[in-house]
Length: 277
Ligand code: 9MG
Image (cartoon, rainbow, N blue to C red; front, top):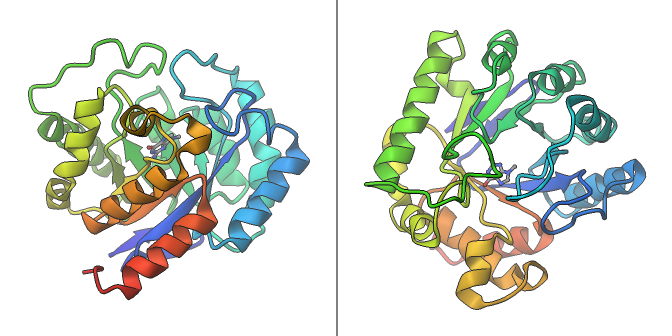
């Protein structure tokens, strides 16, 4: 399976690692560390050296309770870093729901729009549909506001409802002229889900294969891992690696991670072990 993006046709016949570059003062794990543009650029360089297949650059923390930046603040944070990331030879995605930042990033050669709100903000769909070839990751979130998404989320069947949402968003994009080859789907681990919902999404992840598009998943350092093993975000590397391996074993094509070098190593052993399908 392939993912069509602006500058790269990404071969997903083996699992790919998307390295996270958070350019926010309040991110849940590396908050503040890469706020300065120079440090963020160096972080991009490091992730590529460690073997990242693609980079995801974002400036809005989606941690519940985090304060949303203004559109201009988000652009000012992200764009200089993204411009540098686009020189490194790997596909670059912009993690945003803001149509203005999507447009600026695509003009700066970004390859992919990664939107945790699945292009539901007014104008977002039009930006992607107006581009001839950028890739897009459509993620499921219950509601559209990270500040309230964790207030007693309820599903009858979380897998069926998340899949129906993703299918509807994909069809909406197709009606707007975006071909399926440009789309990757993401169940949105931790976005409006309880712990049991997230684990059910993992256990039944193979059911998303019927949607016919590659799956991207992000478990890295997230709180449901911390609840399980009773550890803070900084101590969740082994749990994150186990989650990434379990996800690819169940068919995930791309894992979105903080710890690129460790994930690349873990995937190399997984592939060599013969477990890979
Ligand atoms: C921005 N962001 C945070 N977590 C994410 C996840 O699980 N998937 C995607 N696509 N983006 C995410």
